Length: 295
Length: 305
Image (tube, rainbow over the protein chains, first blue to last red):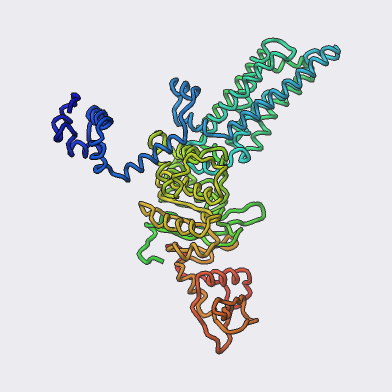
């Protein structure tokens, strides 16, 4: 052998500078340490006689299994840049896998983002039209936007859980992976996807510059109420309750105050309190985030 | 029924289980026990089989009664999770994300089953793919699979994690005869002797591989016992002749050109022959549908095993 093999390998040399049977057998059954294994691999790469000799020691079943594992891993695919980045900042790999592998979410994301953009764009056109005509209260034209903004975000979250968009939802329900973790992971993903275009598009709607930011807390509150409500009542009733939590105050406030009062700073305190209370309820009752079980 | 099986050995025990959907009583005071081996849950569509399996799979909740799986109570949150860790479930109508690859789908289900290590997931995916004969399909999109392949993929996902309890709802639907035989071979060779509950309306499956059978009709357990005991329920009710018998419940002509009859009472002078499992099941179903017949309810064997 011409290469400086480690002791474990060199001491077991066969005749003519080739690897001995003992070393080949140890390599084939994965009993060599990492460095020695590398040395064997470096040698067999250039030595056809040892490659042929190695075949006699290979466990073909194990080889076939390993090949199947590699093919399965390749078919699952390598994580993309975003997933690698999130993994580096500490998000568990399997959680990212769950999100990336949930096409229902992709569809919900797309639907919620497109829906939000369509509504905001439509409202923008309507608001500009009314603004130019100078009709009625300037801020009044924003009421439709106020009404649907947080609800669209909620809709995006809800869509992710509809059996219509998650055809294998029964498997998730019967699996030990905590339902609350799955729900939160998906909800956060849908929220992030929907909130960004809302925030960006809102700048094109007539109104104060702080409005997009002011919408975030009500969005969070409505989402938390939905999460809390679904631990007490069914999903449909929870959606109605959470929607009412937003729609009723908007309508009541718009009837007697400037429309934007519902998102001004004193209202923000109320939304924050509501979000906190609902989050506490959702957390305390987190074991109820399951299909078919008593709320 | 295995005489050596005791209550302690029961993997699944169901007591007084009832479940309604509006006015429909899907399960009515169901009592049964299931030990190791393969139990066939036999009944027509709408008999309550899927409801019962969904309750055992912990995704549905009974209105009344108790369920125990490996001594664990699914009504308790922590114990329910523990049951799920030991469970493999194939729903009757398993939908797929059609743009998933076969391996991607199994990887997704493996994560749901708390297999968090990526390498171990790949090993599990490869193992179950080989078990159902789909190892060459790992990278194939699900939308490109045939119905039979999708059914095998559904079975593969249920095998992830080597479950102790396997609940299979109509697993052979959509499989061709060869695949059905391979499926039987697969179930017979599963490691660890898991408890398998096979819901089906195909009597062939039950006759071929089940050590026990439970017949569920209109939400009630009408029979528990072995397939041979189910066949015995029709003993003396099957006869053959050279012509159709108008008094029989069912008559059909066999390949040997003789008529085979199933009925309440064979006429005098005919050749009474041994009954099959199908005939035992048919007679039982007819008796339930027509409770006014003199034969009345028939139940063979113990309620639990």
